[in-house]
Length: 397
Image (tube, rainbow, N blue to C red):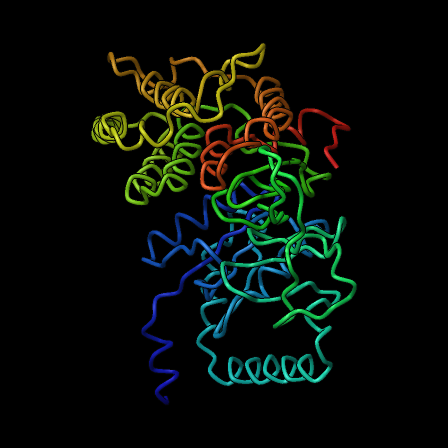
């Protein structure tokens, strides 16, 4: 074993997890495996060496996943986990490919050759069909009014007004347009999702930014046309904890988010949790509720006061607080068994809440800073599986 192999064998894998519509069960299994193995989770493709796609194969998501894959540096490996069964075996096999030094060197040579070929083609290669510019930040540049895809990244201003001029490094200039104060400023077109970690499955949010402020937004669901059932068919405390962990991740509190994932998995494994689990979850609830920083960072964001499903009402703080209430009520803080606590919403209600959230999302994020957009989305956490499964024929394309 040479030095490269020795280092690879001792480095903990870092996974970028993407979820397709219908892949919630697979995602939960993958997250549990990552935690039990001590593997890390990456927030961006550039920090990952494993790309894990959870859920059924979906051609609508393939382009976005391929763009994320191109943004990952070597050594790297990718795997699709279609369901919860077999997640451990697939992750083991992928780790084996990651440790295959000959394979990694061969793929690195192929990437280098492809990069040299693009460089020899002149200044237009950065505007090629694959739209790949690899300029950091998980960048994924749009190539026009169509073809937006991939994970979180920067847009290219739709290429207006450049007259076909080549830009340094193949990076196009931003578009320009009037802002809310009447000034003419750069406009960047940015996609959030659908291949984004800790993000509602299949959700793509097209944003037009001036600085870091959203000027326009559109929401749609990518894929999931064949989904006929939702993992959270009867939402309960585990579903509420799953939503809470996403919000805590977006809020920059990874420790609390990891605890939420651990308690979520414990509640899924124990239909009637024992006293130790209840005490642990309630202790976690008190800790999150007491956080002044969390309340300060989410208060006043994305307020909703119209005739909408009850889980959506209020601002971001109201919504995550309501999810904690669901967990506490289901655990029977007053001594009731969890199974006696009523579910917070039915299947149809979950689909209606998801539909309302998607309809409201553009107006809620317009005028917000980019960092706040993740918090607003995480607080709504639309169940796209429920929407696809329980509202037949519904399409946001």
